[in-house]
Amino acid sequence: MTRRGWVLFAAMCLLWGIPYLMIKVAVQGVSVPVLVFARTAVGAVVLLPLAARAGGWAALRRRWRPVLFFAGLEIIGPWWLLSDAERTLTSSMTGLLIAAVPIIAVVLSRLLGDTERLGPARWVGLGVGLAGVALLAVPHLGGGTGWSVAEMLLVAVGYASAPVVAAHKLAEVPTITLTAACLTLAALVYTVPATLTWPVEVPPVEVLAALGGLAVLCTAVAFVVFFELIREVGTTRAMVFTYVNPAVAVAAGVALLGEPLTASIVIAFLLILAGSVLATARPAPVPDQPREERASSPAGE
Image (cartoon, helix red, strand yellow):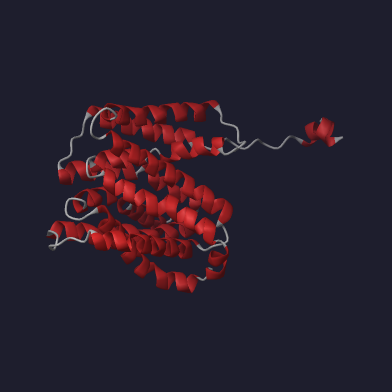
């Protein structure tokens, strides 16, 4: 990977590793609708001029139903659920639960009829990863945080499902145009709820800083850097940063918010990381048969 690729990769590890910290700070001073509105509205304002240059609006209009579905799965639903869950869960735990997205994506692909064979390593990866999720979630199911854990699992399902919609229904729409449109839709959806729950007094400085960081850095800038990273190193290599984000989320929560770093968190992180790597690994390609073997095989007759 080039030096520019490594810089972009490191930036993505940080930009999509720290939103959980900022959300945790922001929900202490503003309502969930205000938080999501601020994040999506500012992101849309920054990305719409770039999307205007990228084009693809005609394709977007033709695919408006899948666009609505994608926006609901990727932004409108998950960003509400994630922010609401962080009113009770630590930022570290939310970041770790989101790390289950690759594992859930494999499960969903099987349920949707994916015929790709899962080898022993990938089955082991699914089991190990789900064990890590269970280690985090089960102790909270009987308490006051049970619903928050359920919200995070729904977020993970949404994040795992949205790329399926994009790949099958929105491939012809430029990614930056799709993102700008979805952020605009989300901002419109949350305009009224945000207005109704707008804070009476100006929130504390740290809350305003968290909102600004979420909107500008973790949304607008992050999507631009993400698209540049894909262009620089390709989609497969670019997505490796998703394995690093949970570690950044845990480190930020522990270092800056004083959240506990327990043995179960460390073990769960290792299990989810190992499970994600194994479950999403692609099988090695089958080498071509030698010419003599192909000539004698039934398929060659």
